[in-house]
Image (tube, rainbow, N blue to C red):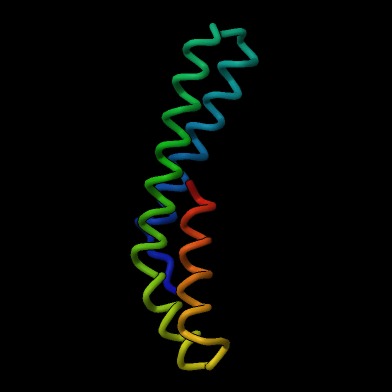
Length: 87
């Protein structure tokens, strides 16, 4: 699986967002502001997840099928379950 610098940079930005949220909470910021920032971080993580899945899912599936680690139907169902759980 290939993880690009774009993927890791997204996660580093999310890490910064999370640290900012923690700081806001420690400073006693109002709930609405904290929740807004938490929602933004969650959306950013969802987008990062989509990027990783989009770039690597096909390659992972092809490799599993080539390695005969199960039927193609089982592998596809597993991938679907992974996507469903991510939501």
